View (spheres, rainbow, N blue to C red):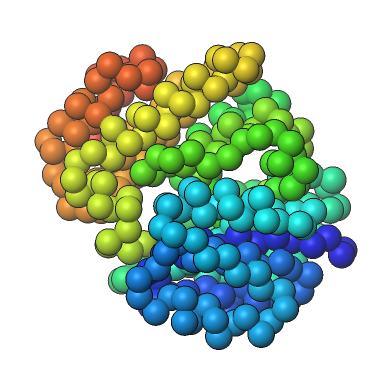
Length: 309
């Protein structure tokens, strides 16, 4: 097991978090890493903290003018030389054996992508193994895989729970797009038709910090989270239609329900009441492709009858 893993970490004004993040990556029991840290024009002491880790020869440092997280991730993809790609958000941290366990399953199952569970970290609690996956290897067959593994009540559609076969990512041409939110889910779903096999392992090994000032909470507080998710949903449908991935279109009703559930979940966490959530969804989804897959009854049930729990 000697595959090099390229770990891409975009950073912007994360002086409170980046040290813990980098320590958790560089202390992995799996040591064959290339850690690509992209400083996206930070104006705090983020760059100074990153510099403390540059003595580790596995760290590759890229400094760019502020261009956004998607540009930083894409820059990392182009710089990566490993057989495997993965991503980390700079305010999160990993369990120390995450890459060892994921890479072992990835190689053993000859997978194109390996996925682990994750933990939601709040100020007052930790939700362990939030998505509750099972240990199994499966072929990616549309739309069955999409429906069963990507459209669950507790979805695991994040880039940082995954190891990707680097050749597939690079040859597919799929890159991160400049949306305010949901670009990681969009990246995964656009990439799915290019992959044949996935392996899932159940331990929650990625720790996902829920910051009250993060982009997703900011969007929820402003009441435009539904609009943001409608943007990425439309982009995904267009991608499947224009590239002949028609079988994946059969999963869109399930994906629409998952996007709806996420809007309700994060809107509630941000303190919005049911009426405000309903208003934001109606305004955000109006005239968009996602609205074609959801009925008013579904939306009201998700909000008022506990469908988002």
